[in-house]
Amino acid sequence: MSMDSKEIQSLIKFVSKSGVNEVSIEQGEFKITIKTDSAPQEQHYIVQSPQQVQQAPMQVAAAPVAAAAPVDTAAPDSEANGNYIEIKSPMIGTFYRKPSPDKENFVSIGDTVNIGDVICVVEAMKLFNEIESEVSGKIVKVLVDDNSPIEYDQPLFLVDPS
Image (cartoon, rainbow, N blue to C red; front, side, top):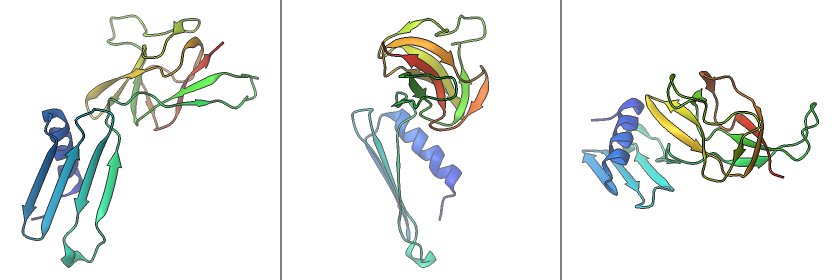
């Protein structure tokens, strides 16, 4: 038996949703162990390939989809953004400014946000993940259009921390 990457990803999602801390599957030469910490901050996944295939064991570390957006200080760009801070996407997916089409935007230009405030939603593989601000300040610019595909670490918002 061997599993393809889609089957492994499905198993990882199932284990992380189930709340189980560790699952091991072993059939012949194929072995997979999925470990999750009880704290939702970090999850580790270890996949070992069969020795027959002559591959080194793969180790994959992934942050859970519920992780908050990382924040980096933005360098001034052509618009002279000064000391603004970028809020970046923690994942690949589709960016949404509203919780649903009939609701208001989470945040708009000029709004003040605090650490932990939900600022947008990123849909990845049919899961909607609320993205929280890791910085306090005023939203100066929204860098992505609603309902747009986004990449990991792509800047989403500019925030004036002062």
